Length: 378
Image (tube, rainbow, N blue to C red; front, side, top):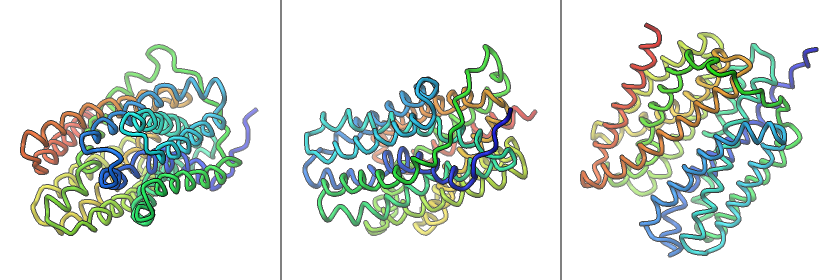
């Protein structure tokens, strides 16, 4: 007997709170907070790479563990666990304990993000009516853009009150999102892993292309705000402004992705988004500061929209085994992003902090990702 689909909007909006908290806030709110922590003497600039690596490592752990935890304690309880970890990590980062105090809490925030991202999307798509799965995926992944936008607005308002207040304020914000989402979580159980070889041949190109596109998106995710100020000579206020544009573009991108993928299908939508990613990275190369406005919007549009597209494509390719395929896909994304982030940090230092060098590398990876996906079509 097939259960009735879950109510669309309550389920999708509740699930969107998961990546909003675990990625949009737990990962990206740290970007505007870090300079304030340095200015307040909580950490020094040398700790930036270590804390960033800790968060990415935690994300990979969370992604790899998401399915097993979900099968052990259920989807809703795993999502509750992820939100609890985000609140705890924010609250503990509000204590000034030095660099090595922050490392495990930033790691924990990454684990939470991996758990939430690994389960929220597939569970929502399995819960709603089949014809609305694309839109549901777009709304859920749109939570990331919403979190980025919220962080770009909230952090500048909270930091003047003190770094501790900022961390505690973010914890309170996530707690409010949790209270809204808890009674509305998607209830679809985590499906069993695919049989050996099942869905993997058809998913291989998709997984590799998604990982490469993630590597190509590292420059705008890390260096765009810095490029606006130090690379293009814009006032400091433009750093948060560019970040806000990135987040707003992400919201539009994920919502548009849901609509487009329902009409064009996952494969065609995926190729379209990779073409847009190449265009977005190309816009970042000219020296004109005003091109940063469309570049930030389009980078956010593709960075978060492509995830919504791939989430639906995974279900098209793997059916009931979509959860297992999505787990491998997000793991590949996390691994390549972490490797590329470290490599580009070395490139950035070796080239005298050249934004052109790192964004050119991002463009090259984006072109390769598009080539991989086009090769599948042939």
